[in-house]
Image 1: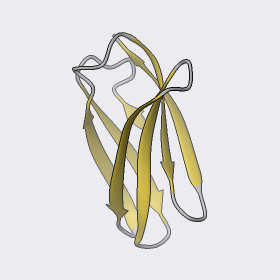
Image 2: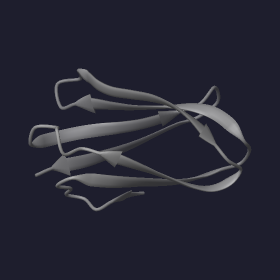
Image 3: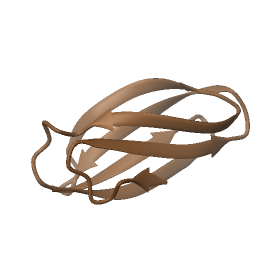
Length: 79
């Protein structure tokens, strides 16, 4: 889940993970350009990550959280 959406400054990405694992959070522009990447340590159960998008230009972005086994995608609109 991504909240709020649309976003002006900070977005919160929430997800549930079946085990503790290292993951990569990436953000792509609407044309597929990688604009942000961060290694994260996900805990077993509920996780929430805050991302500051205040420096991003207005537009549509795609957030991807991926591990060795899974990928999760969400679209967010930056106002």
